[in-house]
Length: 153
Image 1 (spheres, one colour):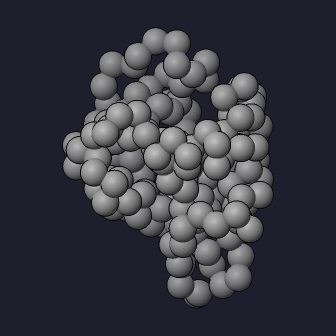
Image 2 (cartoon, helix red, strand yellow):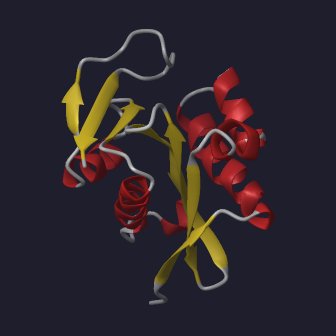
């Protein structure tokens, strides 16, 4: 089995961020306006505001991605974590989660939050294994999210 490499965002990879994330959002939910903006303009909506995006690469194929959106100097939000259908079940989500939390520490974060949905059981297991704990949901941020989690770094 080929090793999974975690690589940083570069412009030539931006379409993978959109394609991988659109696939799972459209399969389970509906694209919301904030999704469209983040997926189509990640440089403007995530990177220029102090966030980060990383990718998982297997051989020459990009198979996963996750973003980190800056909320304030100590708090970041884990966003848009997705793994291609053909690469699910290989531990890629966990590798992305570990890598993005390391990136958050490098960027000065003391806390990372995320919003998710209870029907995303595989994702919830990853988040729990990474140390995320459920906290009360801040109302109205995302239509499809019924669960908020956070981890102290």
